[in-house]
Length: 627
Image 1 (tube, helix red, strand yellow):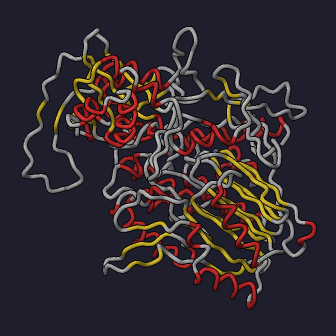
Image 2: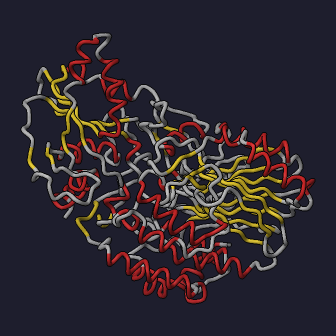
């Protein structure tokens, strides 16, 4: 769309948007209607893809480029489908709908409200992510409600669930074979989770390497390759589509054995990035970001002509400017659908019910996880979220026992009490993988407690470590990726994918994220946003942005209260204790007796996760300092 059209669109809709959208979405900011956009290219079969939404259905109220809510998305989907009723439009979700937003995390079990919002989209294919598998109550909710709601469309080929009768059953269906509504394409679909080992007692993820050798799976491939027409194979699931994810390629080699000339399309997730991979001449993979920032779009022009198939992809920014442009609407009242408005209204009601817009303070500036330099040569970057947490947030932690646990019946618990503080120095360590998002200027609300870090970790302590040993721990923990054999890692999958999937041109600690060099936009003031480079080039993002700088981040950060004492108490999340003990064994430099003595003193420091998790510590600071 040319700039004059965009300006006209902005003028025509601004008043209406201010009166409707802002009220509906908890003071969400309007997108920039002057932003230049790339158009979608439709084929005979097309796809919308969501993944790793983590409950962000209210939208990003402090970020205008992702400010739409789930109701806007539904209106977008319905309009897009109506506008292109001569071609197929399928919609797919690849999991992780929990943990990351107050809408999902403030209910018990997690997801009661957010699932009710999510399932208003009539997905053609849907599966689970690892965040549906950590907690048994969440897994039961998913199985009892979402599997029931979506029926044959809910596929989890390698995930098992123990039902209420104690039987192990597939978490949904092993596969789905169906025909597209418009062009009648015959589609065989499977869904796979990565090799996840940290699920609760009622779930089991079977490794892909085992599944592809199981006779039942081979029998399905033989049966459908021999007895049924298959125009397209869809492999969707909660694993990345990047070239270094070997599980996908092992699976692909088996599929090609039985379907050498069939187009195979992958839809992935988990690592929270925008990505498109060309796997072979008849296979590609799409991954569509995170947190309702991105809607993935993919088109295939003609599956019947396998000698000349064209595939295109776009990563659509989650805002009204993109949604209205791609559906040829310039008036909000004509864009909104009845169902979309109903869902937006329900979101507003749930937000009020959960008190998500309760304001604790006003963040004075943006704090960035990756876009501000943690390893600054001269002085700390004031916009570094990690430095802010080290300097202002973690020092608020106090030693306190609340007897908090996962049991609702806590009547016999003793009253909370404060532990006696020692006269030692203190180090507080947390892993950066537990920090999920930036902190943006504006209202710091009840919902904000969950967006930066949704996890309710307890705190452990190893007291009386010789200070010359304690100060080595951070350096040791930051010297490698540190992924344990059971899959636990200090960094999250998004951090690891940034490191592994970008072609770095590192100048000190800066990662060159590359510019998009489109013609005719040099004079336009672009906003910051995604500038994705994938196997197809640099034109995948629907919105043309300035690049966001991306800096290296450590595995762990620490607060060090150094008073020059001989001994230091090391406090840390209980989740990362295996890493702490490993680093301590290295720091003891072969002194096994000292190491043994130190670890025998590991104890609870603070179990008040409803009072002293990272979000609550931010709340305490906001109330005191951000008024």
